[in-house]
Image (cartoon, rainbow, N blue to C red; front, side):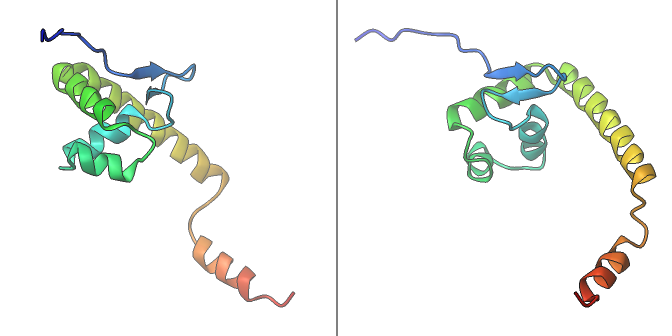
Length: 110
């Protein structure tokens, strides 16, 4: 029997908004790489995100390991975008005292 060597590409897709997702799932590259950097094994990542296929997780981690600089640049940009969005949300919806407001609302008679 002869083994056929096939090169496989990482199942990464860019959304119109510029977010890199794994295959046809909503799990982002950020999520997989962050879990990996926090010490999760591919199997543990698969348990946390059952929509991902284990071979795809390995391919994504391999992509990260081969393209660390580009991925880190992308992750820094995404974190900057997240910070801007959080600041905008906090300007519109002040989080200070939200717990007290929610408890007050919950305890009001109906």
